[in-house]
Amino acid sequence: MTATAVERAAMTHALEIARRGPRGLNPQVGAVILSPAGDVLAEGWHRGAGTPHAEVDALSKLTAEQLRGTTAVVTLEPCNHTGRTGPCAQALIDAGVVRVVYALDDPGAVSGGGAGRMRAAGVDVVSGEQAAAAQALIHDWLMVQRLGRPQVTVKWAQSLDGRAAAADGSSQWITGPTARADVHQRRAAADAIVVGTGTVLADDPALTARDGDALFAHQPVPVVIGARETPADAAVRRHPREPLFYAEHDLAEVLADLRDRGIQRVFIEGGPTLASAFLAAGLADEVLTYVAPVLIGGPKLALTDIGVASIGDAARLVVDAWQPLGVDMLVIARPTSIATSTSAVPAPADEKTSRNEGEA
Ligand SMILES: NC(=O)c1ccc[n+]([C@@H]2O[C@H](COP(=O)([O-])OP(=O)(O)OC[C@H]3O[C@@H](n4cnc5c(N)ncnc54)[C@H](OP(=O)(O)O)[C@@H]3O)[C@@H](O)[C@H]2O)c1
Figure: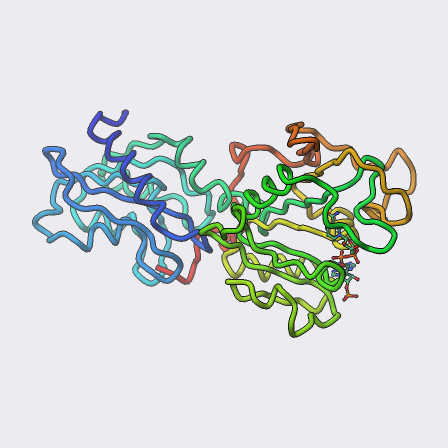
């Protein structure tokens, strides 16, 4: 069974309205209810953990009479688990919806399986309509389900001879304006920017994502890790988002807390000690190295010890892109164990990594 042209158009719209929802603990999902004649009767989207799922939001706008014999078009398989409002699959059955078209299977071990429940109740179910677009929309959420933590990009700028700073600790700026603008764009695509206390004390970075002098509309949450106190007048304390401070070195713990706050993608901006700790712990999914045609020499290497004693142990990466940026070069690479796309995303091991179990 395949979707009709009207259902395909409704799915395109459902994908658009899904974007109105926030990135967070739950995926962005959109839903459209079609009359038996194919007219749009209602639309809904998920506004974040603790609020109704998209299907329930759309159903709530119609009377029982209007709902009879309708088709629901949803960007993610209707869930099969009981949160605050019960399974969406059952809500659709109870509402008298006779056909459901959805894009992507729910990967959750607990929340998945809604399609089977609806089919067993006699509902026509079509899956896979615009699955690639739905997957792209919630790529980062799917990665969190797969990894059990936010996706981690470790970024640094270095001289041609692999230095991240001069002997006196100054590092602003190694790269040119084109490379720095690229960094700001990537910051704006992340949910959090993370640095160690060493970088805060040496550079006093603002950790904002800027387009020239202006701030990008989306600002990632600034995060500082380390036991030393961040000065009261540090620039990061004037960030438009409330900074998070972790006075510890347990990076897995920090990532778990960030995940619980709904953070899906983090951008590690150094310095060398923190970047090395993420790499040594196997907690880097992607490495971005901005290489400038400048020589610095001296002791301030871009990385410290990452646990490689012998060349046979070197962390060999797969290069996804080499990109010239003005006079500089960006290399985007990842450990061989990390897949580029969520097409390889398997179902999570337990319900904690599925849609927020306690929520509607
Ligand atoms: N080129 C670049 O891209 C770049 C980027 C950033 C910084 N820098 C330069 O790097 C220099 C600062 O380097 P840095 O290495 O001191 O900075 P850092 O990596 O930002 O900070 C190091 C501190 O992070 C804390 N930390 C948190 N978790 C840790 C863990 N798991 N293991 C070890 N430490 C952990 C520790 O602080 P506590 O002792 O407080 O616990 C440690 O001393 C400056 O010269 C700066 O200009 C360059």
